[in-house]
Every structure is written in C-alpha cells, then in structure tokens.
Amino acid sequence: MIYRFVAISDEEDSFIREFELKETDNLLDFHNALQEELEYDMSQMASFFTASKKWEKEEEFTLFEMGPGTSLMEAVTIDDIVIDKNQKLLYIFDQFNERALFLEATGTTDEIDGREYPSCTRSQGKPPKQVQFANFIDPVIKIDAGFEDEDDNDLADDPDLSDLEGLEEEDEI
Image 1 (cartoon, rainbow, N blue to C red):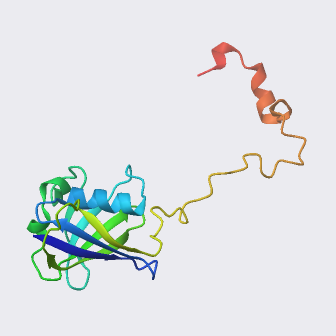
Image 2 (image 1 turned 120 degrees about the horizontal axis):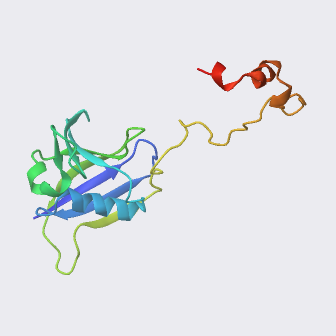
Image 3 (image 1 turned 30 degrees about the vertical axis):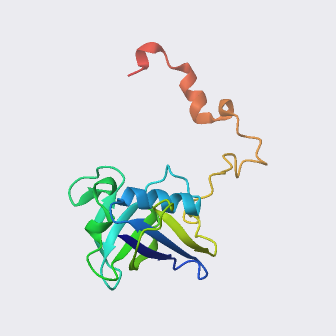
C-alpha cells in the first residue's frame, strides 16, 4: 500500500508538496525525501511529531537517541504512525525557532511499477528557508567603538597602573 501526504507551510502560502510513501518506508526515509526535495542542509537537526486534529504535538521521532519520550525515525514505519484517516504530522525543520511543515495523510493508492518511493508527486511554490537568523545578534562587532577619537588609550599613561610599577616581588600576594 502507498500512503499519500501533503505538506504545507504557514510561512509560504503558495508552498505545497505531495509525497507518496510505501507503508514499509520509515520516517527517516520521509525525512530524507523532504530534505532532498526542499534542498535543505542535511546536517541540521529535525524531528517529526504526530499531531492532534488541532496540530498539537504528541509523540516525537528524532534522528538520534534523545532520551525518554522520543523514538528514532528509522525505527518507525509509515504504517506504524498512520492511525487516523487524515493523520497529521509536524516536521520541525528549524529546531531553534520551532518552525515546521504541516503534513497530513490524504489517502492511499496502489504502487506504480518502476516508481521509486518515497516520491514527491507535486511540487508547487518556494519552500520556507531552513534556518532563520533574524533572532540572532549581528556577529560583526566593533571592538574599538567609542575610542576612535581618543588619544589616551595608552595603558602606560594610566595613573592607577603606573603606581604598580614600583612594587617589589615581596609585596606581591
């Protein structure tokens, strides 16, 4: 049996992707298909969550063992997680900003001979960028800001430091 999923984004209105997966494909296969189709950097962390009808997170599936309460993507087949007719999944592709794709099972079909699965069967619109850096501070910082016009930056002229020059070794603590 082949499961059909539609992927949408709340960031890009025109974005739609449709995927077909074998019932024996696992979530890691689905992750790899999403990453390849969206041209995302595969070194970034990502997770799937089963979701309620109101898109609330339920069980988490991760790339690596993350402790209690999570399962590995490679250990869970599509058939294992599609419990409801319109099973919902969240695919968190930007862990730091909690950004996700909304995935929903839309039905089943028969396998097509010669087609590789998982398969993207519809690609419309631009995908959301994988990582947003808008919340981070600009890494370019002027260290000497505020000292540009001052000529008294020489430490030898500092009266507090010049008093230390006369200390002898026995005076040190």
